[in-house]
Amino acid sequence: MLKRVGQTEMEKNHVTPEGAMIRIKDASYPAPFHPGLEFNSPVHGNWNIVHTGMLMPETIQIYVCADNCMRGVVLTAAEMNAADRFSYVIIEEDDLLNGNLEDVTIEGVTDVLKKLERKPKAVLLFTVCLHHFLGCDLKMVYEELDRRFPEIAFVRCYMDPIMQKTGLTPDQKLRKAMYDPLKVQKADPHIVTLLGHNFPLDETSDIKRFLKKCGCELREITTCDTWDKYEKLGEANIFLSIYPTAKYGAQTLAKRLGREHIYMPASFDYEEIKQQMERLAEILEKTLVSEIIQTSEEQIETLNVLIDAQKDSYYEKEVEACEETIKKVREVVGDTPIVIDYLMHPRPLGLAKYLLEHGFCVEAVYLDGVSPEEEQEFHWLSKHAPKLELRATIQPKMRVLPRKHEEKVLALGQKAAWFTQSPYFVNVVEGAGWYGFDGIRKMAELMIRAYEEEKEVEDLVVRKGWGCESCI
Image 1 (cartoon, one colour):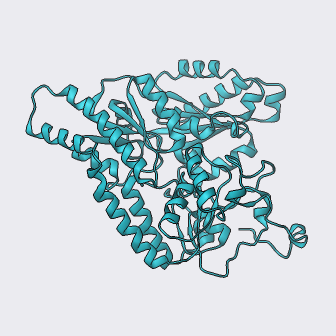
Image 2 (image 1 turned 90 degrees about the horizontal axis):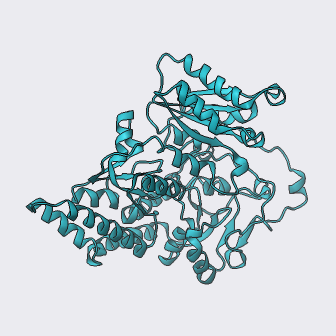
Image 3 (image 1 turned 180 degrees about the horizontal axis):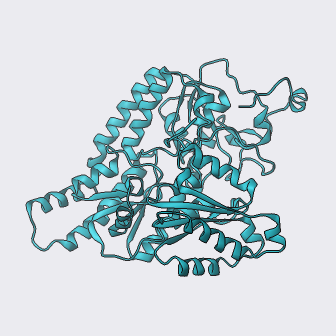
């Protein structure tokens, strides 16, 4: 990794944190920092479109783009030892001036597929910004590819960062497109499918434990190792999504297949978790009751679980267990400053609020914008923790502002660790497989471990795709 030698001009001129760091009481919602030139830190644990796309079994990815854009994605595939599932079609300047982008795309993809000894069940075809700029007729491209290869499903994917700040992001579009090949099929009331998540839910998560009690099966793309298992994701009667960028795709699929969708975002608020689980229990009860013809003891037991799950008393033990666990963390961590980043969990402000309410010393949250889902938390923190600092991760000043802390800092997330250079950090992205009360306890346990055990920051955070295989 490149390291700075000597002082930069910015450092010599005494760069101030203004514009890159701000107390939450002075920050604007939802954009605390002005947009502009962006800095990209060497923290790569977050998943990108290559990692997420590889979750589809028996598929390959084909990117149609110029050399410069190709570099990042091809290195991602190589690092995760998945180069055998990655192909590309290079667009050259002559293709733009004298060629036809439709033909380049069609013939390039055709050439790739004809050279394969074994055809994939599906192709994740990534088109890029150039296809937008030149007004490429993508509808015609896919129609022709479908005609040439009727046995292959072509998944419409995009690598178009020019669309990153307006409308749907490439990540949102991918998490929707990955389920487009699922066909309309008979729904099974005892099957629930989790959509758009990069990590399998922990076996002890609230959702999995609850569904098991009800005699229901939870299916996830993360556990599908064959195309046949992937297709059976569509048999679910209820679709769930727990990650913000998965919501759009899950809603779209549920509407197309005529199924129920429940958005259950991972939260640190006891009441919100309870309401989400009650909603799931309510819908499951309606579904399963309508299927009962002759009541058995097993069905009566299931209905009792569903009814109990809609009562406050059902969750009292869960809350007590969380309180007991977080109390132990407080005893270990004490008043050690804590910093949090948005990469570790999609609800960083909610996590900050939860920890502050339990007596922890939360110093800062690293983020570049505030999610609409955290508007209430933003205003609560502005009032009850006005000195809490919001720190940008992409503001250019963050490249040169001091990163060392004289005292011990507990960092929750890779970016929080890198920006503070703290070896005491929770090495997790996107909330891992956590959910609900169990997820809070899992996080608390990792906080203790992180506080007691040092990690190599520079070695861990540069590895692409946390949880994926890495050759470096």
